[in-house]
Each structure stands twice: as structure tokens, then as C-alpha cells.
Length: 304
Image (cartoon, rainbow, N blue to C red; front, side):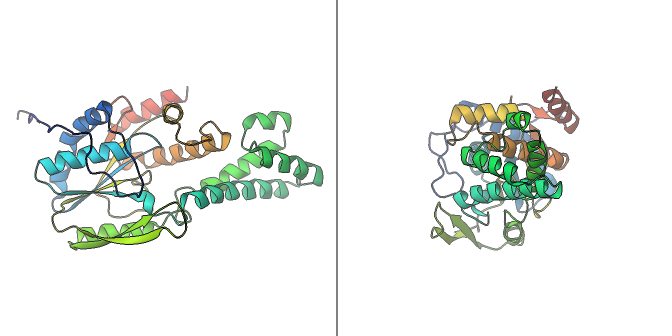
């Protein structure tokens, strides 16, 4: 059977995007090209699902989830398939500032408890640790060369942080799973959470889904084991080095190069890798569709 030839509509500069308040996206030619690569495979997968379909566009920080999900929704709408783009970033238990502080607290508390468990938390070491906290250097591996006992602290802190990132302690997966279930059940109106930068900036908007067949969930955790109701997980892959390079180019935050940010990205990457076997579509950073075996090979080579 001959493969279908796909024609794609022009993508204007401004198109609908995810529902995270204040979120700004910049769609470039690389996002459009990647969406064009994904789209035929996505339509094939949708035929196996039938009815309302939840597509999760997931991947690491800065990989282009928001932009590519927006273009995919544009293509679906052009083909007469109603689509809505939902941002999973509206569903953490804390606003971004407070969640960043909680991540740091979890790491430091875990690290300190690791020192206590190994009878290393004397007054001298705790004094050094306080200085490192003030300098924001306690996650820096170079520090452990100067103070070997910090290896124990960093291992224990990383273990504690792993138990927090991307878990129900950080994110309300139950609320998102319930929304996906309601969408599958055909509800016409869903109340979707909106979260700003302050604790007072929290509200819900009623959204009309009566003409929507596809819900595109763009979210790092869209392929998580804690989430139920995703029909087609799409993994946008990038190696840790590619992710960090992208963040530097984008200057996403003031601490892009910090050791703690690097630690967080590494933990997120390992969790994405552990979930990758469930993805129905995997796209490389270079824009190629990968089998799971090819994905494993790419990731293994990145560790060499």
C-alpha cells in the first residue's frame, strides 16, 4: 500500500498555544519541521485509539514541548480534528518560586540527614556546610574534592531529591488523571486550573470541549507512571548535554549553569529514560523518529 502524501498548512507567526498563564512561545522552523515528522505517525496511532484521544508531548526542559504541541494542534485543526493544548505545568502543588525552594530544602535536608546517619555531622562540618549553602555551592561536585565527606552529603541529597521530583509530593497527578478521565468520558465542559507566579494567582477556567477530539498535554511528566489516561505518549528526546546547551542559549533562568540545576536536569533525564519504553513515538533532538532500541543506543552513546 502506498504511503499517504501529507500536505501541511502554513503556520503563521501567532497560533494558539498551551494554557499556562503568561507562557510565551517562539515557534521556529525546527519546531515546524519536527511537527511535520511526528504528525503522520501520530495520525496512524490515533486510528488505533478511536474516539477522544489524549496525546502527551513530553521531554526534558527546553526541548520544544510547547512549540511542537502547538504546531501539532494547528495541523489537527486544519484537518478538521478539534484539539486543545493543556499545560501540565499548571498542576504542581506549589507555585514555581515555592517549588524551587522546596526542591532545595528536600535536597539539603536529605544531605544533612545523610551526614547524621554516618556520624559526620559535627559542628565543624556543619559550619562549613552553612557557608556552602550561603554560596549556593553544596551541589557542586568540585566541593567534594576539597571536603571528601561532602560526597556522602551529595549522594544522600540527590537520593532525597529523586524521591521528590516528578512524584505526587511535587505534582497533583490525581487531578490531571481525573481531568483526562472526564475528557475520555465525553464531558463537554472541563474546569482547568490556572497558576501564576504568586500564591494568590490561582483560579479555574471552564473550557468548552464539545468540539474537541484530541487533548494535547504538553508536560515533562506526560509519560509518568503516576499519570493515568494518556493514549499516545510522544517523547521529544534530548541528551543532558543537549538540554543544558539549549538552556544556556535560551538563558531560561539566572542559574542555568548552577550545579543544583544540573543535578535536577540529570534526575529528570533519568526518569524520562525509565519511562521511555511506554512512548508510542520518540523523536530525536535532530528530528528523526527513533525506535526504542535506537533511542537506547543514542542515550548510551551520550554517556560515553
